[in-house]
Image (cartoon, rainbow, N blue to C red; front, side, top):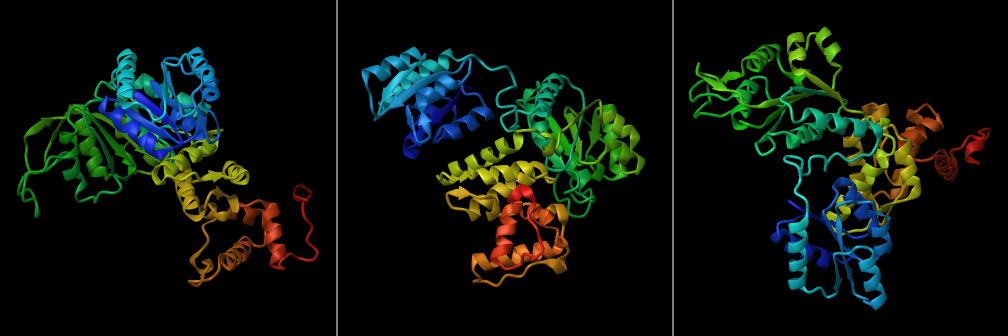
Length: 448
């Protein structure tokens, strides 16, 4: 299916074109300015771009000329037509040049013609990496390995810290595989009751246990022909690990309460946030199952090791929120610096939550000291919680939080600043406002 990117600062125009494009069989992405357009292109290269020539943050034609998108075609739109701009658009290789208000009939004809000339995507690869945002070396290697293993039937074990995107990687493997048109079934082994997980995986017959008032098909049966993703495999009981190993070796399973075997026509992708060798040594993962699952192990890099990807992801999450709520919020330079400096122990999940909180707390400009994201790294005890009365001013709440954090950090200002997500200089300025700077304290030369 051809993919269309619509770049225009008017929401109504974007939505109208998207509706027409969907009718013509396109998938669509929307952007209100050049910055958002770059993020959408990073997510998925479009086959066609409908691009306004005058955008809030730059010239659309100059933006198009700065891109290197072989195979992508562009249609320019403008409400200020001139002969010179039309000639320049054609020189840029534009497939069409539309005047506002856009003729819907002409737009449909243009999109239909461009869709017919677009190259057909490789089987199973459409949108496979759309959700895996990143250009770092670690992410490039991961995507390369996924592309190599996906077409095979090899069992894959994904290893990585919590929040690194293991389910997204598993889904990408599924989308590129020959099984891409069949179900993808993600299962969190730690989120299902140990008493129910066998029934959830393999199903059960009516009357097989108390409460089983009907036949139930498990994930393995419902995912027939597709992929089963077993997340947090080390949380599975040893008894069930034995059963799973038997299924992997025989290719068959039985519903609870019956002896009739069913073919297990699924591909298994498993994941863990533990070191698998340590999990085996600690007796939480069977060694034979580990070797059966790790035919092709893949390690997902933590966010702190993905140079450049942190800002890209933060901008991506903010762009999604802006698009959803029709806003134009942006990060201040100091916020970008703070995001880059933080270690993100919770990885992508923590970053996404931080962007969401920042979006809620800020108006147009998101500043680094408007929200903190370092609390998880220091995990203060409950008796150090700050109680702020309802109706208290934001300035007073900030004062209580800063002073309490400094106390929690034993008076070490550098640690407190990192914990609060603000610069050391900002912390000194705030403490000076509160009259809480020691008389004999000297500012480091780096913040003078």
